[in-house]
Every structure is written in structure tokens, then in C-alpha cells.
Length: 399
Image 1: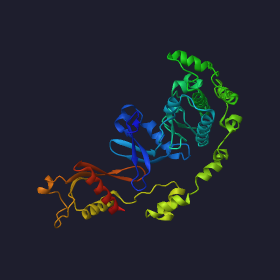
Image 2: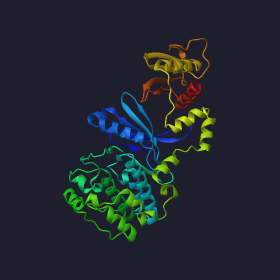
Image 3: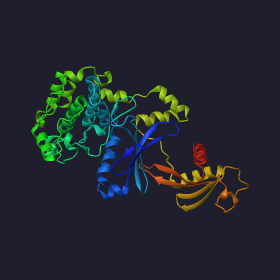
Image 4: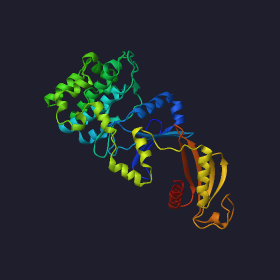
């Protein structure tokens, strides 16, 4: 278990073939419906599907069941930036600069893609195994349209721009810039520039732009923050201006120094070593290259009836007994000893049922998004290790 969200749990999982760890966010359909958040969740999923940047959490897959929507996402080993700041108190200037540079790079990509985040804060910035930034949680994000303004007040008060909490119209990117200024302040000081237990007082401080830079010793950082936390959004620094600031330019990683279009072009290059590893698993090289270049995920093109027939044949080979309880749902029983004759097509009552080694499980085929299907196996009874052995054997039969 990695944590809990507004509509469910976030769990750690592992891809069987590669051993690659992922985070699976399980969203309760009932919870989403009860809170009237169906449109919001759908928008978040659609936006995340569009994004492909080294400092933005990847959405690998969306799996839908009758009760849940499961988002299979990139796993960030070191959790969120908020906890990281709490533990360290404040970051050394060079480390804070590196984190800030990566945040701005991800944000520049979002804005270029006509997406505004609107809820930037350390809680929504994750860190991978190398402490690199991964921008996450696009629940309040929205797409930008030329000539159109936004008015929704969203995000956390401490990081929200004055125009947002005042209910004024705003274009979008400028509110993310304000939030980044607050985050940079927090990185360097370990505290927030605007903070008060009394909400009306907090809002007055934000609207008046009242904060102190005394704890920040670096002149460059002081100058950058003071030009980002400007109450008038028209006078606030833009992303290109931040990227040209001397403090930002210092120790800038080479891959972040290249123009954004060139960076995205480099991201499309295929790592030959990784490609060869995938090919060794038995995949067709041309299909793998096509999937990478077009950001397509491998999927079965068969109809659900055909998929179930393949599954039943595989179960037959493994001497699994089954009983149909729905078009795409079966109760199954497996005994890890050779069966006699051809008696495994239905579940029978015999002495084997009482065996301590008998494994009972259910098989359910779900339809996911984009004409994909999920085959779910759920253990009902029997030793867990035997069940895992059976799953591995079934996977081998289906490949």
C-alpha cells in the first residue's frame, strides 16, 4: 500500500515480464459518482494520456471494472516533495535549484501543450529513485484555448495566486508561475511565504503579496522569487523569463538547456539496449518499434468470445475444472496432480475437493478502454503459492 486518495487506494504492483514496479491508483466508481467528480476524473485521465515528459508521471494504462477505474502509473520510489522537505527542513541551494529546474521544465512542457496544472504544491510533486522530479495529480488541470479565460477557484490556499482566491478571470499559466514561486520559497526556507491559521488573514496576506525574504540569503534566489510572487499577473515572470534568469541558468543540466522541441525529439529516440531486452522476451522487433514511436500499447485485437475460448483451451491444458456462471465469468478448481481421463471440463464433487492442495478461483474478463480487455483471476480458496504457480503456468500457455 502506497497511500490513500480521495476515491480509493494507491498500491504498488510489479509487471510480471519485466519486474518493472508501477503504482496503481484504484478509483471507486461509486465514490466518484457520489462526489460528482465523474467529469473531473475523466478530464484528468485524458490529459495524462497526452503528456510524455521525463519529469511528469507517466500513465501507462487505464483498466476499468464494474466497480473501479484503475490507473497504472509510473512509480516514484521516494514519495512526494512535501515529506522530503519536512524531513530535511530546507534544501541546500544547489539541490533546491535542481528540483526547481525540473519543475519548470515539466511546467513549460504542459503550457506548450496548452495544459495548465492549477494545483502545484510539494504534495503533488513526486521523487523517483534518483530524486528526480515527477509532476503528478492533474485533477484540477484544464486545457487552454486562445481567447478563453478561466475562473474556477481551485488548489490549496497557501499556493494559490491572488487572482484565483479573489475569483477573478485568469489565463492559466500565470497562476502556475505563482505556485512555483511559493514552492521555490519552501525549498529554500522549509516554510511557506504565506501562512496563517486564520483563513481570512491568510487570504489578505496573499492578496496583498505580503511575505518576507529575510531567510533567503542568495541574492539571485531572492530576485527570482520576488519577481514570481507579484500580485499583478501581467507583471509576473513568464516561463521563458524564468529560464533566462541567471540563478536558474546556473548548473543547468544539459538536457534541460536544449529547446523544448529538441528535448521532446530526443525523448522519442529508442534505446537500442532496452529494445534488445524486449525482443529477447519474444516480441516482434518491428511491432515494438511501432508501439514506441506511436505510443501504442500492445493489446489483443480478438473479440471477447475469442479471448475466452483461448483462455478455456489454456485451462484445459492445465487440467483446470470450471463452471460457467456468466458469459465472461467462471468458477474454477485446480488440483496440482494429473487428472484421469477427460473429466476437467466441469466441476465435480469428489474426494479431491477436500484436498489441502486444491485451489479454487474465479476468472472474469473485463473490458478496459480502447478495445482492451483485462483477464482477472481471484483466489477463493487454497494455498497462495500454488495459485501463483497456476497463474504463471496460465500466462505461459497464453503467450
